Amino acid sequence: MSLRNVIAIDGPAASGKSTIAQKVADRLGGIYISTGNMYRAITLFLMKNKLNLDSDIDPDQVNSILKKLSLSYTKDSNGKLNLMTNGKAVDSEIRSPDVARHVSKIAAMANVRAWLIEKQRELASLGLVVMEGRDIGTIIFPDAKYKFFLTASPEVRARRRLAQTGETIEGSTVASVAREIAARDEMDSKRKVAPLKKADDAIFIDSSEMTIDEVVNQIVSSIK
Ligand code: CDP
Image 1: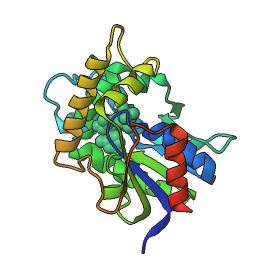
Image 2: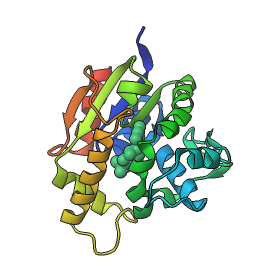
Image 3: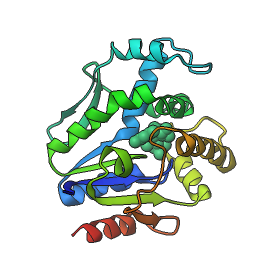
């Protein structure tokens, strides 16, 4: 039976998923969930626990650090979900260039994904959920009735990322940001577990030449 309360939005880095997913959730009265932020919060927690992410990573060491982490969501007065690490709301640090540089390596680890999968699936019990990531339509909710794969040209994505304050290092250019996101996309698409991939039944949207509202309208009208 298909899951009618889940809207899955997947796609590569900086494709506009979070802006679009948030607006779709607002329009439909649903709850917006970024799974990328969960991988980012784990990456930051590992960094804070002095795991060296620039060398080979020992899954056992990651497991023992994850034992000290509780990742949860609490609803605020506006009905928005706030991601909490050990009871404290995450902040913009999870979107820092340093976290972005390491997150794909962590997200490629089977034990990390296994640690998150049930937590992500449980979120469907919250009601109408708009969840965005890389494997929502393929692995987390393969039975979701509504699936979208959102992308844009590398140059458009690099420009969008560059416009987001605090997400790129000083002196970044369109070309340098394009290289960084291409490297991340390659790791995300080529990994063995849950690679970035369009689900066969997902609607493909190239937003390179579209405004945010046009994309939101296309998604909302194909759901209604
Ligand atoms: O916002 P941006 O497009 O840069 O990325 P994100 O959605 O915050 O995701 C950050 C990273 O988390 C991705 O590059 C993936 O490595 C990982 N991720 C994943 O593996 N699976 C997901 N469902 C979501 C994110």
